[in-house]
Amino acid sequence: MPATQRRILFKHIDEAGYTNDLACYLKNGGYAELRRALTLEPQFIKDEVKQSQLRGRGGAGFSCGVKWGFIDAKKTARPIYLICNADESEPGTFKDRQIIHQDPHQLIEGMTIACFANSVHLAYIYIRGEFPEGARILERAISEAKAKNFLGKNILGAGYDLEIYVHRGAGAYICGEETGLIESIEGKRPYPRIKPPYFPAVLGLYQCPTIVNNVETLCNVKHIVSMGGEAYAKIGTPNNTGTRLIGVSGDVQRPGCYEFECGALTLGELIYEVCGGIRNGNKLKAVIPGGSSSKILRADARFKLRDKEIGISDIPLDFDSFAAIGTMSGSGGVIVMDDTRDMVDCLANLSEFYAHESCGQCTPCREGSQWMKKIIHRMSSGVVRQEDTALLKSVADNIAGRTICAFGEACAWPVQSFIAAFREEFEAKVR
Amino acid sequence: MNLTPEFEKKLDEAVTHYPVSKRSAALPLLHLWQEEYGFISDAAVELVAAKLDMQPVHILELVTFYPMFRRVPVGKHHIKVCRTLSCALGGSHETHACLKKLTAADGDPHGPCTSSDGKYTVEFVECLASCDKAPVVMGDDDLYENVNTEGKAQAILGKYS
Image (cartoon, rainbow over all chains, first blue to last red; front, side):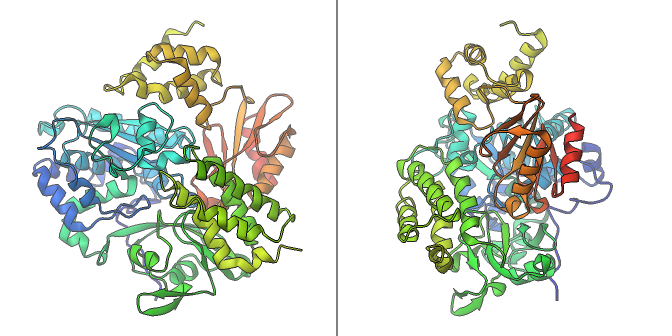
C-alpha cells in the first residue's frame, strides 16, 4: 500500500487559490491558535511542547521542549531572545522555502506563540541572502500581522508585546550553525562560538539567553498548541513524533517536498512509490538521506537496525533509525543517485561546496577542506596516485572531532562515507 | 559621497530594527548599499562604519567574508547558476556553459564571468535550495527552475535584455 501523506504544516502548500497574504490566512482560520495561546499560561504551553516530544527540524533533532526548558524567565533578569533559523542552506534541503513563500503567516503565528511561551519580546528571522523574495514576503507578512495587532504592542489586548524583524544573511552556509548565526546578527563574521556553553540558552544573542529554532520546528508549535501535546505525541512513532517535511531531489521521476508522519514509510516506499522510482530507467545506486552532510547509503549494502539486518529500501524514515544505521535524517533532504553516476565526481562536487563554505576559524577544517577538494578534483580529472584514497580518508579523519563546530563533521562525513561505501570506485581510478 | 535623503532614510530605518546594538545593522546596511550602488566601495565601507559608530575594518571584514558582497561591480544583470550536487545531477554544468555561451561571458568558470558589453555576469553559486526543480538559476532576484534546455536559458536572458 503506498503511504499517504499527512499534511499538517503543508496543508495549504501548493493548494490552488491559496495565497500568502493575511486575508487568505485568516479565511482559513489563521491566528486562532495565537488568540487562544495568549489566554494560556506560558509555562502551560512550554509543558505541552515538552509533552509533544517535538524534535528540532533543522538537522540535529534535539528536543525542542528540553531546549526551551533551559530558559526560565522567572530566574533571569536579562531579556530573552528568539531567533528563527531560516538559513536553509544544507544542499538537498528546500522545505522551509515552501512555507516562507507560500504560507508565511503560519511561521509567524508559530513563532509568536513560541515567543509568548518563553517571555520573548524581540525576535529575528535569520533568512539566507539567496531568498530575497522570501525576505520580502516575510516582511510584508510581519507588517500585515502588525497592522491587525497580531504583533507589536499589547497583542490582541493580552498585554504582551513582541517585535519580529527579518535579518538577511549574505551567502554564508556557516550562518546555519546557531552560534555563527548569532555572531552574524551581532554584525560580525559568523565564526561559531567555542563550546561550552553548549546552548545559546545560556549565552546567546548579546550575551543573553536565546532560543534558536528552525522554521519547521516553529510551525509545529502552532499545531501542538492546537491539538495538545499528548495528541501530537501520538503522531509518528515514540521518540520520533509528528510529521516531517521530506525533500527528495536527484535521480527520481517525481522529485519534490512531501509531508509524512515520522516513521510512516520506508526509504524504499519514498523512492519507488512516492517519487515514482529512478528516472530514465536506471537503477538506484546510492542515497544521501538527510542533507549533503549525512553519510551516504549504498543501494546494495546491508544495514544493522537494532537486532535486524535490512536493505536500503526497508529503512524507516525517522530520526532514530537513520542514527542507528550510522547516518542521520538531518534536515530531511534526500538526494538520490542512479547507477550512471560516478561517485568520485559526486564527492568532488560536495567537497567543493565544503571547501567554499568553511569559515576558516579552525585549522583542520580550513586547510583540510581545501586539500580534500584538491585531491578529489584531481582524481575526478583522471590524475590519480596510488595513495590518494588513503590520503583522503586520513585528511577527513583528522578534521572530524577537531573543530569548534559541527562543520568539521559535515565536511568529513561525506568523504569518509563515500570512501567506505564505494572504495573500489576510488581505487579503480588508479591507472 | 552624497546620499539621497530617501536612501539615507532607508538606512536609518534599518538601524531601528536593532534596538540593542547598532552594529547588528551592518549586514542590512551593506545589502541596501549594494542594491543601490551595485558593489561595496571603499567609500561605502567608511560611510557604513561611520553610521554605526564602528571602525571601517569591522565593516570591511564582513564584505570580504560574506560571498554575496562584492568589492567590484558585476554586469548589469547577475545570473547565478546553482552548482551544488542536486543541480549538478540535473545538468547545471550544461546550463552554466550554455548561459556563458549565449552571453559570450568570459572567465574562469569558478568565478563571475562577465560579458564584454557588461550586460550580464554569469556565476556559479552554492545551493539555492530548490533542489527538486534542478537545475535552478537566479536572474537578479528572481528564481527560475528546471532550466535544462538552451531555449529556457535563452528565455531567461530575454527578460533581462
